[in-house]
Image 1: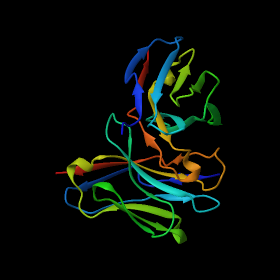
Image 2: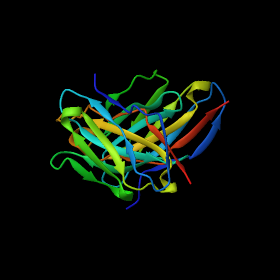
Image 3: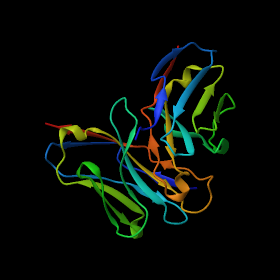
Length: 115
Length: 116
């Protein structure tokens, strides 16, 4: 069974640009969450999607957005990139979300560097 | 507010020595509890999880964790550490219930270094 797949793995962007990251969850999983990981802030929750609907959102500015498609694949977008957006962005999938005790499986992440 | 704390930022142990990583949680009720490991440049891998029942949970790679309600703790242990165990370890909690809006709360992580 394939795991959570994130693309691209590494990318470099310039301040002011926008970026789109993609996540393919484990087959059958309908919940997809996104996290930002930085050395200073640790793992911070961005948002969660379930059946194409955003169910929960963390404390990030509106420049961070996401969506989920009917096949459960998800994308997140960051517009007007800032240097502080440099981070590892992790996607995680589960059957229905952590609240039901479903295990959350993580992808290997997308490393974003903003210069 | 729900929180998960890991009091130790960095721990160094010698190869072959025993290991205990601490995790404390603060929730209104007993949450689901998880331990993840992250090797440099990699995503998070699930080591073990506690939902209910037996308070001693066995995981992969020889790890185990014990849930102690009285201490609000879920400490991770391993009897003999291998050099390949050097990594960052994260404890996480998720509140039980039907509220699909809840999500994982991660602790800040503990970095484990292993001396040869």
